[in-house]
Image (cartoon, rainbow, N blue to C red):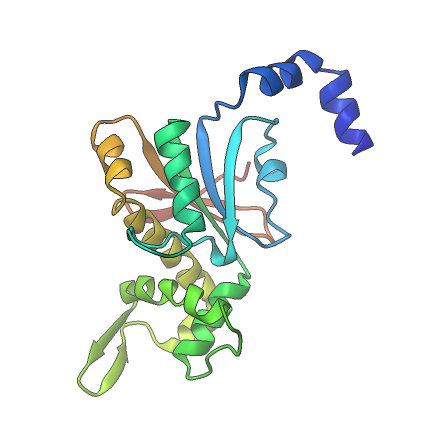
Length: 210
């Protein structure tokens, strides 16, 4: 806290005063994992007021759904898009994601023994349809489950793509994207190497680390 106060309140008091009196106007919503190793502010070297951030297990975006229920991630997306009018939404996945490990365990017949995590990360299973196919005999792997278990980054990146697709089910997100007023981005961060992957029309390719 002392370091934070020294850097932002003593060196740049005008910025903090403006944030306090005029409110926030971030250009970017970032949907990241709750994982303690992926700190969005540190990763992007962001200053206060630059990022509107929502974090959840496995950085997942549920599909649009009205009605009763507690829609924490949807509420954050709605506020960022409809009230803050952000210009960019980034879905930030990462390597060694515990939520994705739970997805793979469930696919292998070992569902996680937790009250909330299992149902939540099940959203990522749909994204693995990029790699898995089903027939009348059960699950037939275009890429084997064993290979996916050995290379969970494939599923982690597929989950990012799935979340980008789910974002477009929110009518006010799609409306702004179609109008060219909002851009969606998918990123995947390799904790071990520092490499960052980014989306390009649904595909993920390597870009220099930031």
